[in-house]
Image (cartoon, rainbow, N blue to C red):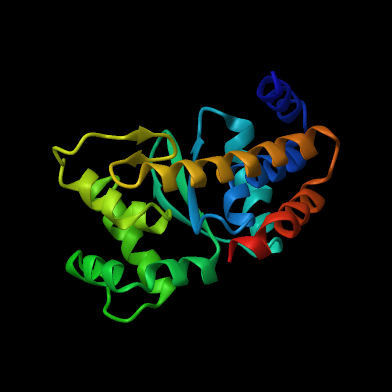
Length: 209
């Protein structure tokens, strides 16, 4: 019921307020510092969403200190990756990740702008390259097993397909759910988009990094 109320409230908003709250909700895990990046699909058939993104969304993300890149634009949609630069750099700067990504054609030296632009290029080439999972904070072994079409049994399916350490994944899924619920609750209570973003960060970010 709370999700229905949330989307009804969101749909009732005017363009600027609508896109800001849409972005805060959809990037809440990044704002909270529990995830380095998320992808959001902007359907062009939803003219309110598409027009608001162009008019107000991009500047709003800059105002709340998040970066973004439009990974791919088609006739029907724009796929945007929203990320926290420092957390993403920390996430990718691991030996396993670097070796894996270098084999995919990424630079040897971690420079987030170059890595993000390489991802954009590969997204255009392969539509949804498997290494995207590393940018989104999915555990390396699960990304690797999914990519290799492993014969391992999928232990859990939530924010990603889990093939290893389901107990740890459950803890992470629960943390993600708490952030999402917090965002919905506070938006329904009438918090402005900027206040909501700040509240999410103050409530979760310090404990996440």
